Image 1: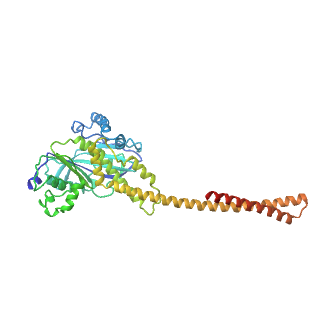
Image 2: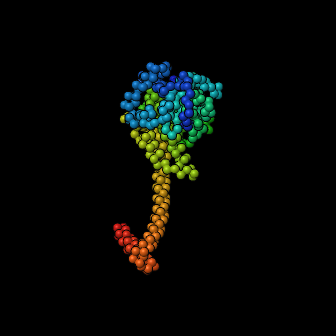
Image 3: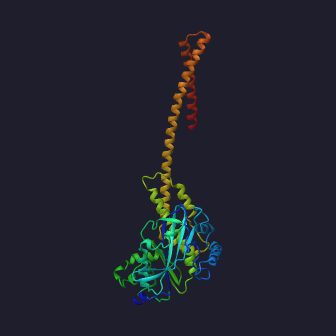
Length: 428
């Protein structure tokens, strides 16, 4: 057990990410040299982007054809910012290759880059990659837990120089999500299995806790919880790797060489980023929808989101579709969006009914007022007609007025009866 805990994996990194709220600046400031339109960090030959220059920018742009062969076009357009509009001065994604050292708890790690992904409704996703060099499995689990809880001001290295204002750096929670990939060459036994190590790394527990061993054996999960988590959340397609998709973490345990182009450039950049945006959008929509002081209708907003970002199918291939579905399940996206859809539809129907009742009531009031005006106009017309006839034919005014008034009243009553009979006759 101690041997696994102290083993240094061949490769390990975590991409920490969170949603933030942004606003465009009134006057755009000069961008720092490190900030640029998004670039791929790993290319198809599995080589990392070490230059971040015009050549690597061109290679990143050329990957779009591969993305479209792998994912549906609408899904690709969504993640590349081609299916929605942002303010003209903003791009859908930025990269900042910071190459800085992050120090915490007597450990130093390299932060390779920070990415910013901007979406509609002023919601963005910030992501930064931490490489663990010469760190043991136990160190990595410990550091993931610590970094997830660090203050956001220590993480957003370039926030003061961005072409948008970060209003709220950590939306809907006080911790970062983590996307971890670990390459190893371990051989497991019945004393401590690959699933138990995967569980410990995904839950940021001391190595061995899943088996009731290690530094803190009291953190051992119940057998029922462990089995349910592995059964419901584990992704296992090939013998050489497995992953665990939980609410706060996504963890890959890979034996042998890792094809980072898939995990970092495709699965994280496209699948994880989109699901994180979708989760935070639904949280925000839930918040304003249930605000008792907010009387707006959100039906159009939800259906626009549901059409443009809440995809059921994303890929021509089985594996990315399966990973996408598991991540959505871990974030409870389908249940949350369905419940919100039902609530919004019901609320819209009630508000439409109230609005219609008010319109009918207003219409009745207007018709009553018009009837009164019409009656007064008739009385005035009868009086004026009586005056004219009396002056022309020499008749008595009172007798003439009574006769004309009676005639008009008969005409009005007969007209009303005919109209009512037609109305209710059609209704039957």
